[in-house]
Length: 340
Image (cartoon, rainbow, N blue to C red):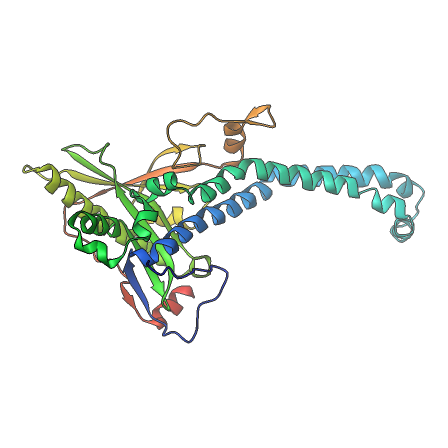
């Protein structure tokens, strides 16, 4: 049985461990850590979506309007009999009923905004939860993660098992800092979409631990993804015995309109926006029938109103050799400068 170190995203890294950062290909012992980091992306995404809804101009107008109307209605009589602001303030402070009368409006506003956020972002929470199941792990990694995680060195003695382990390990790469995974990227081939003229690969997930989100590692992850896409394209050519001109390689990646960190990095790397959808779950099979918000309004309409989309980007790679991703071996001083 392979030992799987526990990755606690709320626990700071051990400062006694040397401050070095390195790339680490996926290994059975890192399988749980890779899954944890991918799941953390969707938990962070839910938080970002909640913030988008709360700070949306319509939400702010709604909250201010309700509270203002409540205050005016409750206190207009006191204002009418007051000659000065000081007198009005004194009357308000000594009228406990009128002060507590505002509470129902506060509860109404908080409940309405909270319910709206919950109904719109629960789909994102479910993605994180479903990643614990075999079906979603298969779609994320393109292989059964639990089988891979439970493999042992003895499996390398079997040719079929050895090929499976090698192929699975090539799909995902992590970045470790102080001997702890802090970032992950997974790239899988889209064989059913690829042809002899075009090979497609898909970044099914890339994420940097929240504490290191400003360290610039997203660029490194995308460089690694390009490497992997080219390696997958070479394997596709070899497997299908394509002797003519090598097919063009297209790398796809999903991003979210509320993600102000990963999405701009994709655009700076040359990825072009190709489509957008209100179906937020990238691993759902087929077209998911949208539910109705409070049984009245299609949730797709509400998502469009708040600007919540899943966007698909693509990058066409040239036929040059693999790009060496920056950050393969970086000193601790480099990490500090990035974080600054």
